[in-house]
Image 1 (cartoon, helix red, strand yellow):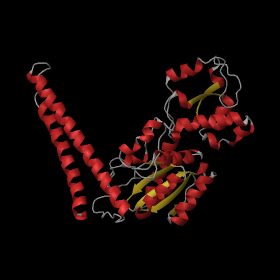
Image 2 (cartoon, one colour):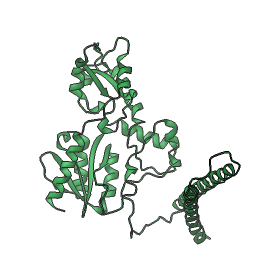
Image 3 (spheres, one colour):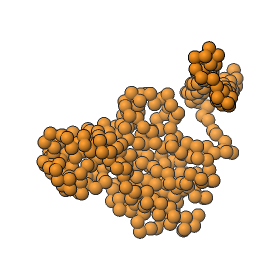
Length: 351
């Protein structure tokens, strides 16, 4: 790791952080403009929609913090409120509490909680088979605090972790800096615009989890063509739950684990406690059943198409088309056999 590597990381960090948010769709702007007697969503002052320069749109959850670009997240705001707030989280906008009634502020916070269910990075460490109430309670406690951005990038000897220095006054960011420096012994990298640390590979996984628990949104800046380390699982830091129903269905998907996952040559260690063994068997049986269902469904579709072609109900196969579909079915069959072998390897030693 050299100083030039860190300078390049800082440049990418600042470019990403200063990048302009996605343009608000015209349909969303027209929808908000058609309100009767529109007022500022924050200070409640009337808005003259004919004077476009006197008002703007301010998201309840800022776009750079994972807020969705949709009408439920957008609010009409007078120019003064939009400028004063900037890109801060609603909870970090301390001046607003001095100007508006408490019940109005609470209503805004409740709306913010609703939007957060459709925003990015709801990563939890409670486990794949955690109860719905456990997951929701953890997320609600996290959403009661302002979120902040943390950027990471891998280098040959470890990881760079940093965020813009202009936001260092926030308590959570000070706690994150103390955590990286004193608990995980990250090396502080001095820079005028960025709070940066060089964290070793062996503690990075634990450090990321603790940053997430400190309400951080972790953004990976590593290039897609990085040759050091696997890129599998890189999107597992982000999870979208558009509805409460999908929060309850989270156990049907893969367990979220902060990237990086175990690479080649890494020896996995498993707990031999009875509860851990049972949960491992349950997870492997669930994966085996899922892969078998996908294989049987693909095989059934192919057989149904063969029968339809033979009966003249659909067009004939194009050259190479059936072979490609058959290859997909064979791949799913191989995936099921691998999952089945893992289940057997878990059960046979127990016998």
